[in-house]
Length: 286
Image (cartoon, rainbow, N blue to C red; front, side):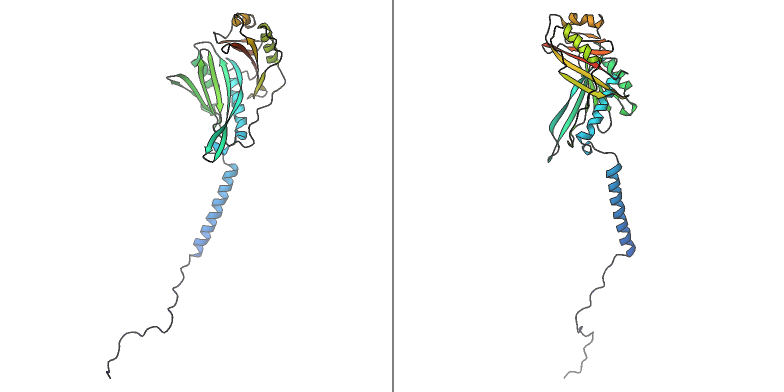
């Protein structure tokens, strides 16, 4: 037998002991939990109290009153012209996301101004709008353009549409519908109905009731109202027929529009549709 002795360590007699566990420090766990609670609280508070950061965060129902109030501001700012409110339009079917359908609300005010003074009229309106709207006029190759921000992501635009005619609009953009839009109620009939009836009779129309009534809240209280009715076929010279009501001094007298003021009521006759369509407006005098 060999007397050599084996060097080294004997092999372990049993299983290897487990490696020590790696644990987070207690202070790090406490800090992580506190941060998560704080973040959740800030998120909830922001959702409840902070203003929206994109227009999709306000539904059509919520944006509707902003648009209505904007129209009242526009009427007040443009009372030096001859305004007529246009019925609200809700365009459904726009896409907020590929999976969510929405709708867009547009309201408008049509103005009659002296021919050649369209840009000056837009500038005057811009100057009279609320400072917070940051309204301004930009001259483009297609003419002057008014742009303003009525708040809540409601855009206000204005532009000439023909000689002596301007259209002002307030637009929500595409929104979730929510509870849908409800047009503002109309106050009791006022002087605008009498002015409309008088103009209809002068043109020989048998109409006795307005075909349409449109309203918007005025910034100082009350409401602006437009009543509208078709007078039927054009007479030989509707301008000459209506001239006595205008006192011989209409605001606009073209082949497409005849507009005047009578006893505080703005009367606009649209002659461009093969018949006379009359609109009489009161309210929101600046």
